[in-house]
Each structure stands twice: as structure tokens, then as C-alpha cells.
Amino acid sequence: MLTHAALQQQSCKHLTVGATQPEIAAAMAVLSSWKVEHETIIRQFAFKNYHQTIEFVNTIASIIHQEDHHPELLITYNRCTVRFNTHSVNDGAGGLSHNDFICAAKIDAVFEEKFLANNG
Image (tube, rainbow, N blue to C red; front, side, top):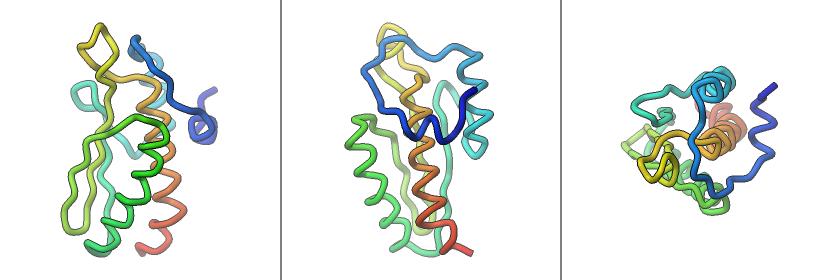
């Protein structure tokens, strides 16, 4: 059974095959704060101010770099929208892969541990 903790303990690998619909459904059951849109997973994170938003981006940058799996980030005053997909899967057409779910779980953990408690 797929769990948030299990995803956090994994590392990204070069993939050329995308996730199947059952794999996507199982991951999205675990990553309940994320949503699927056009073969991308998306989550918007809310913060108190711009400084905290940028602190979040800088914090997740090390995870993104370590995993070598880079999302699209949209940064505004007190929000950061994170979008993951994998360009190398499905013969280069892109789509979702297990790497997207691994990184989403790791970013969730950072947000919950470092920012959620301070956001209330």
C-alpha cells in the first residue's frame, strides 16, 4: 500500500514510462492536497507574507535539486503554486510519473513541518 511516508523515503530515477491510471489514483489518494490537471499535479501553498513564500521556495529548491526533478513554480505575494509532470515519459510527450509523486510528498512534508504550524 502506498503511503506518504513511503513516497518521502524514495528517490527520483530517470523514467521513460509514465504512471498508469491505477498508479495515479493510488498516489492521489495519498496526496490529497494535490489535484490532477492535464497530466500535471498541482498544489497551491498559502503563506502569511512574501518573505515566508520565498523562504518556502528556497527550502524546496534543495529538494528539487537533490531529486533532479524540477517543477513549474508560480510565486505571488503569499502563495506558491507548484506543478509537477515528467517531460521524459511517454516517448517524450510528457505526463505523470512516480517521480512527481515522490517530490510532491517531500514538499508536503516540508510545508507541514516548517510552515503550516507557523501559518495559523
